[in-house]
Image 1: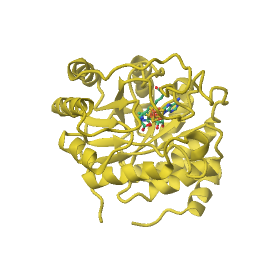
Image 2: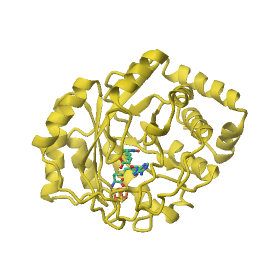
Image 3: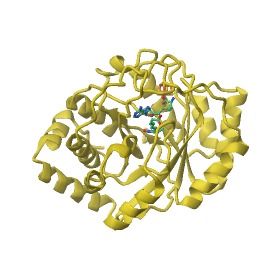
Image 4: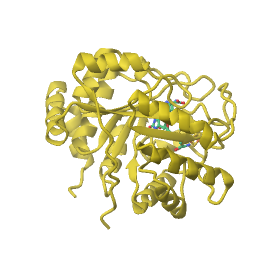
Length: 323
Ligand code: SAM
Ligand code: DTB
Ligand code: SF4
């Protein structure tokens, strides 16, 4: 594997816009070719009341955001929602919990495992984002049919302590390692617009692009400012910074799905078209993310029709670490 270094990312990211677009499109065509976009549906299966202090998050118990702590949804409650997501055309179903991490052997984790077994029987890719894992918990999730685990680095190691103090950047890396060792695909990206610099974003990308194996998908979230959180007043991200980051991610991690994630409600159709041209090939689909709004399905399908994009069929091919 060739190391992607910071200097290369910076040079790539800062070249004239249209040169960057052309380079990213070339890399996209070498690796994907087909104008397909993966549709992933999200469901928050345990909302709010989280012990952590992530400054962007509506679900932290430390901030008054109007999101109350809920209980874990049962398998019976989740299955019809997954089924409907499949009927709507989603091929990946992603379930999230407002947990610091998983506690093995608890009835809650057993229930999540049962849910994963059942959702995987629907023939969808199963992704979960449950916070920190132990090595054993990762193996149990893999055995339950989970194809991908989402665990974002969110920003650079240098900026991370400005955003979260209740766990460390190294904790995040450890969980990602356990996911790789268990043979699940890693879904790992970040958030932009939290007050970090463009260099912070590239330092995060440098780490993600050098994972071994590389991540299967890289979600790029634009901060959705939440009233009551320390980041409530952050200004929106400059759209060209977003498009440049997507393009640089496509070039740095050519075989990963690059997902335009949170914040699409604030992007125009034209901005989204540029994101796809820059190499994005996955979106969160469905009217809701975890707690925040997402574009309506009809609007997404109309944009796909306009651009000649088609939904990507399911491919369950988790990758294994080489060492
Ligand atoms: N608790 C688990 C964790 O922290 O990994 C899983 C859920 S957490 C909500 C998943 C990811 O959602 C975060 O890492 C962050 O990237 C993204 N996210 C959460 N709130 C967001 C917001 N307000 N704007 C943009 N992205 C957000
Ligand atoms: C990811 O990178 N983005 C998703 C998913 N992984 C779990 C979450 C976005 C959350 C947006 C804010 C909310 O809905 O509360
Ligand atoms: Fe939100 Fe996850 Fe942080 Fe909890 S650990 S506050 S759910 S981002």
